[in-house]
Image (tube, rainbow, N blue to C red; front, side, top):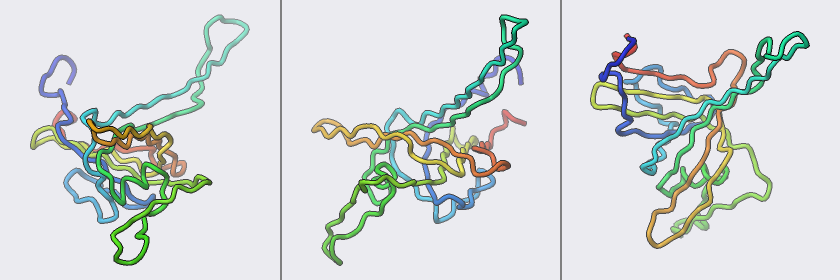
Amino acid sequence: MAGNNTNEIRVAGTGRILVAPVGTAAPTDTTAAWAAAWKDLGYTSTDGIKLAKKDKLDPVDTWQSVSPARFIYSDRDLTAKFQLLQLNEDTLPFFMGGDPITETSAGSGIYKYNLASNPKNNEKALGIEFTDGSAITYRFIIPRGQVTESEELSLTRTAPIKLGVTFTAMAVDDVTPLATFLMKDPAYA
């Protein structure tokens, strides 16, 4: 509906971030449960999630005009940026690059993560879900992407460790969407 409508203002009051192997089926509505392969990454900082879509348009210049005759899409970046607050077997490899955490010897209770000297692709599917009250639910699904930037870790006495990442969407093929929004929201009726 056009015009001012306070009922269409959304606040992402509470939510979660999930990851799964590329190719894992995502829910097709806002009420279906996420499959077991989707891992909830837990708490995030109060900054929440920042989604950004940047399109690069190249102008087609002509001799006959000082303004472009048209524009050609040359690039599209879709990113999700957030800071994870929990350290565990799902979050540390997601932040660092994908190799698994292993126990040093059976039953020792000592675990290690080896950061490879040669980086490897760590492609994942990403799911973001938030609710605004009890009647509004949004899900945002990126079927294929990768962490393309990791923030520096700050180890201090006065603040939690934050695993800050930028996750960039990647094309699956020529027909699969780069991302999908699912909304249970009367504003779209």
